[in-house]
Structures are given as C-alpha cells and as structure tokens.
Image (cartoon, rainbow, N blue to C red):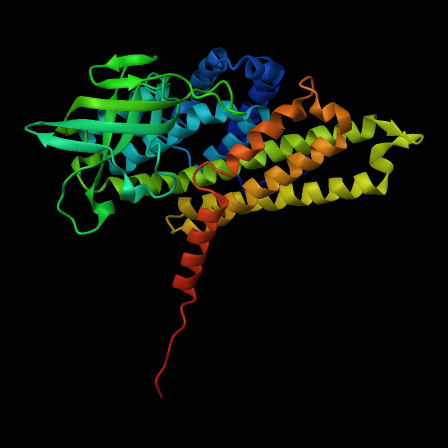
Length: 401
C-alpha cells in the first residue's frame, strides 16, 4: 500500500467507495488512457462504467436516488480518477457542480425533475459562466436574458463549456434586468436542457464544435451561441432571478476543491512514474535513484504531493462541516496546481529523453498539468481571494486613545 496521500479518519463506506474507484482506474482507465488521449476520443465506455458505479450520483442526496456522500468523498474519488486520466474527471466535475447547485438552491420541482436522472448519469451537466472576452471578471457578463411573458429570450456567446456537446443540461449565467445597483446582482442562472451534439441543437442555440486544446483531450470543450433562444421562466435556478452570481460562486468554490483534487491525482501519478523509472534506469553502474541528485528530487516531489493532498482534504472537510472555506479552497487549489506542475516537470526530467516521447505517459501529464493552473481561476485569482480573506480576518483594529 502506498503511503503517500493517505487520508486518516475515513468511514468504512468511504474506504470501500475509494477502493472500488481505484480498482476501476487501474483496470479500465490507465490501460486505455494513452490511446484515447492521443486520438482525442470521448471515453464512452469509461463513462458507462462510472454510471454503473453510481459516480454521477455520488453527492446527490439519497432521497433523489444518489449516494448522498460528502464533498470529501467526491474529491478523493476525483483524485483517484485524475491519477488515471484527468479528462475523465472533467466529465463528472461540471456535472457535480450543477447537481450541487440544484440540490442546494433549486426549487423542489427542479430537484425532482433533474436530480434522480442526474444520479444515474442519464442527465449530465455542464457549467457555463465564461465568455469569449471575459476572463475572470464574471460580473461583466454580456450574455443577456430578456423577460418576455412566461419566457426569457437569451442572446450572447459563451466560452469554455466542458462537456458542451455531450451534456444535456447546462447551467448558464446571463444578465437580467433586476434593477439592482451592483452588476453581479443582475445575473441569473438558467437550467438549459438541450440535445447532445454539435450545430444548432435547439432553435436559437448552437454548439459550433470542439475547441482544439494542448491537453485535456477526449473531453469536449466548446463554445455556445444563443441567438433568440427561448426558455421558460420556470428554468431559472431556484426561481430566483438576480441570485445567479452567488449560486455560481458557490459552485466554483466546491469546484476549486475538485481542481485541487485533480492536481493531486496528476502529481501522484507523475511521482509514481518517476520513482518506478528511477529504479529501473541505470547510469554509471547503478539505478539512477541511487544518485543523490535524483533521490533528492524524489524526496521533494513526495513532500509536495503530501502537502497538496492534506490541504485539499482540509478544504473539503471545512465545506462539509458547513464552514466558509473560500480561503482554504483557494489555498488548496493554488498549492496543488502549482505543485502539480512542478512535480510533473521533475518527473519529466527524471525520464530524460524518453519523457519527450509520446510513448511514455509522462508526456501526456506534461500537457495536462498546465490546465490546472488556469481552471476555476488562475493562481493570481486564488491569491486575490486568499489575501482578501486574510485581510477580513486579520483586519487592523485602529483604536483612538
């Protein structure tokens, strides 16, 4: 049993779930990941396997057909999956965020309508906040939803939809006119049901095609164009126009723990590949692991893997305990993504020339790790969140004597 990245205090059920996921990753994901990734093929059979295991309903409450597990259980499952192939974790991440938002903020009717089918994976969620010229300034969203009787008419462009083509339910953030004084209070989340596929999938809604990416292959990343798309007012999440920004930010907060978990998974895999290769590869008459230069690299890599894992677990446990975890989630995402890039880079160097060959798995990890520096907010955005939280907690108390 590997001693790195262990999590003390898990229940028997959690340990069983994670053992099942680990076996699935070793048997069904790792052996096929290279081939699927190089072909940029959607992992259909793997997704079917995850449906059967109940992973799509892992955190959905039991009364709606899910397993009712915690964010921690989910994050540890994602860590295992990303260890096998990060793209597969992408298939369930946006789904998980949308399910979290519906379970937490949806009306009872919305919960009944979506959650049981989301738990089985029949309905798969995507999350649409970003826009082509938006970046991290979410309050500046341009996509508009205009009220027209019992409907809204949506116009605008959305960018970076993970599962944009394969999902059939998209949580879309759009600007509505609530007359609020602050821009973010005029934003509303819509639950958009759509057929799978590319092209004009519904009147006024077009998914143009896959964005070609450096890594994170297999999972589809798309744009979405809304042009006079009509949707019922009952599709507003929680029947609460103007609350969309708060709902999406909560989704992103749990998403940050998820991205930290993915970074941990890739870092663990990079370390495993490096320590195995370093014991097989010989130079100057002995395995390269016996050269201090390499041994010290392995020591540093393992320490980073361990630190990132513990911070990710801490952030998940805080959220599960109902505490505010914006600072902890930001810290976990920051350190896990940065350490992941560093550990992967070191594993690549240990592999020498072979690391540059597409035959070796480390080449794929080198292309996947950078995505985590950007997804769910860049490192700079995390530092902004962390510093704001710290100044809130450690505010200078001026006293007048």
